[in-house]
Image 1 (cartoon, protein in one colour):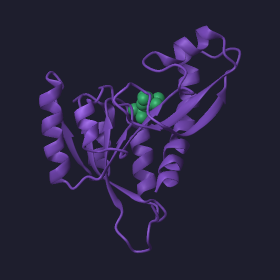
Image 2 (spheres, helix red, strand yellow):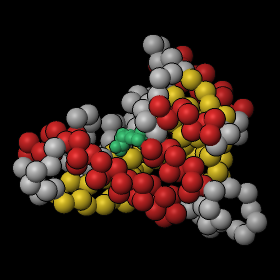
Image 3 (spheres, protein in one colour):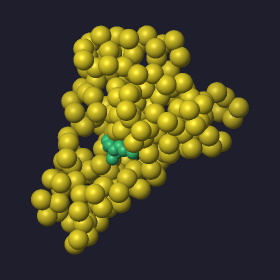
Length: 191
Ligand code: GRF
């Protein structure tokens, strides 16, 4: 989809559960002239998510939802997304799995970032498992979200070499730096 000069940016919501470094980076990217998206809403299932502070810093609307009841949470979220005219969703460290029904409402319009070279190492504790496997490379992936965990069509990937003395913390940090470059690249690629 080409972005026409002067045309409005695509209204985007970012879903987070944690520190929000990808969120911060996406906000910065969205402010560039070349960015096809604007970030209009930050959504979280976790009221302690550190990343929520970026809502105040960048003056972006934030919403919290309890996921004790998934179906109800998703129903409420869909209403809020509609109210805010959200057209596109970026999951960035969002620790809940969205249902088929939810995804159906945003077909091809939800992206996720995962800290491995998918389809390898889907799911949690990625870096620990990668290090145990003795692989030479790990990396990160931005993909479309489907109803199966970390399984939608891959948009872009970046390889990161594993070093001899890597701990999961050190590797996570090195990969996170690459994630910050990869997410905007994926967005530029699809629009
Ligand atoms: C990232 O490594 C992301 O790939 C994974 O969770 C982490 C979130 O980090 N899904 P942050 O909250 O963006 O700092």
